Image (cartoon, rainbow, N blue to C red):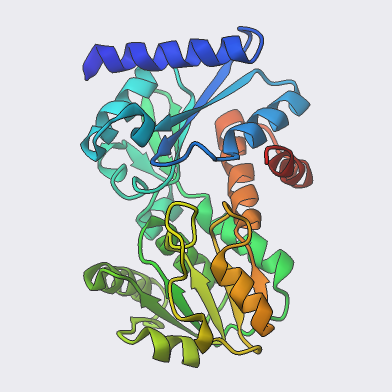
Length: 302
């Protein structure tokens, strides 16, 4: 793709500036992923930047819309740096695939093995993970007193790795990892188990895992508008369990609706989406973001 991709990104940035009503933007950020046209992230970032008096453009770089193959992720990262972007947010399915093309990883991103934020600084592409902190902050805020003895987590991709790290840091006694790809679940359980004393394991039977768990977390795409359904049979839930879903579009997934009907405490993905954005915004700008304002921006972007 080479120069043509750089030209494309420059043109998209210029068009976005024009649509925003000016050419004063100084910070240019992009969200890289597939099926991201409904994302509220651009509006959330741009509103907070305006509140702080920062010129800021946030573009959607949707591989589905652009017609790019997954293998183009390295070319796009390189082109964004050349085109003058200050950084990128990375979402499904590139949170792990992006790592080989980066120059450095933060300690947390290295431990998790997934990146959702790339900062271009000093000629280097630096990978960070703000998802783990975002989930932990959201959980602490909304789920005080939730039992953490045993948790079943569905999904072992990049988001799952971040959530697993957060859960273990919050003191989960035992974490079951379940994934449609058993090898991926085993790899994550092995990596997290090494970091947290072997309290992370795979579990072959989803029904048994849900029955045994105090809480269940969905980190898979199942429940998004593009992937309707639930990651397990919700008839297995009982009222004393809590259920978290990191999906935020739709806000009320089928899983959360079913869990709430049964009487479970529930945690939607909005909190994680906002908190991870707070940390990413601060990495991009070097300025302190207001968490409550960012949450308001998120709602305004609906």
